[in-house]
Amino acid sequence: MPGGSPLAAEGVHTLLVQFTDVNGVAKGKWVPIEHLDDVLTVGAGFAGPSIAGTGLGRSGARSEYYARGDAGTLQALPWMPGYARIVGDGFVDGAAFDACPRQVLKRAVARLAERGWALQTGIEPEFFLLRREGPQWLPFDPADRLDKPSYDLKSLPRQAPFLRALHEALASSGLDVLQLDHEDAHSQFEVNFRHAGALQSADNLMLFKQAAHAIAEQHGAVFSMMPKPFANQPGSGLHFHVSLWEGERSLFDSGADMSPLARHFIGGVLHHAGALCALAAPTVNSYKRLVVGESLSGTGWAPAYVAHGPNNRTALVRTLPGRFEWRLPDASANPYLATAALIAAGLDGIDRALDPGPACTDDLFSLPLAAIRERGIALLPQSLDAAIDALDASPLMRATLGDTLHREFVRLKRDEWLAYARHVSAWEHARYAAAF
Image (cartoon, rainbow, N blue to C red; front, side, top):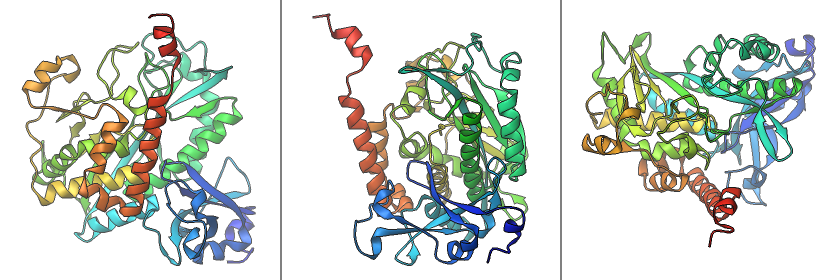
């Protein structure tokens, strides 16, 4: 498509060819709009070993990584006049690259399509606006100091310029923004979009992250999807609202109750919760969020117990009419890998008719651990190290990720855990330096 394309006529001069690495970080390069055809047929080229999680070598045909554009994702970027994003799928040596996170999700979606099914997800990103003073990260708004700041209508208007610009950018990009609110920590917010197909939802989340980073910077703030920046406040989740469809028919909807198919899908999600944890909560910091305990505002809201219950926000799976909310993922999760793993776990639950157990209606946060154990409710892994052990021991997750990505993900995360374990913190100095 030469420079006379409709986008060029609209003033677009440059393509941002974007892909997502194993860590869920957007990567890419700029390509003149005149070379759109090349991006669609061959792709934009990158040095493979420079991309986290590829495991590619430094020489030969398999050292080159190509991000081949998906034409359906091409759109102008309202916050970057003259630029348009196109999402790229990873290709190596002329073939779809098995360790590309988007290709991993496409494989999972194809497994659903073989049965005539499609997964819809509504992903709810929570995030912080931060500022830096010397070595210290702080909430962006110094006046945002309520003990219980959820839905605060004093702090929210102070961030109206940023939130309005973000809303306009997302809406102009085709995302249907349903609501924006102040969350339960200082300078923490949430944006909700309308649900979409699993692949489109993941693409939309990456678009949101790019827009939010850029617009926050324009307003003097740092956009952060760190799971838990402050020890005494709630962290940021990335809750997934999940439904399964056969054409226009919901496979999870059975009146007031979950359908048998929904029960088995949830059974798979609970059965594989430990391995899923590594992909849905993939950082050392994630496990500062996945604990039960009091925070400044009274609760942390993050699940630690492997259970399900009707409209129960203290359980891992919150069931709702026609859908469920998967509350495990945090803001650092790679949306492609988390969704692919969710699909694999759900299909395994369906194929093996796994029973999720009785619904839990109690406030699990209020129960002592002994009572949780008496009920046979399992705990999620309480460290990245334990979660990676669970992932490494899961044949299902190995098959879902593919050998290359599974190996690289496990290697990278074990390195992350080891670096953390060997780090000597200020807390240790304060506790031990003069104690003995």
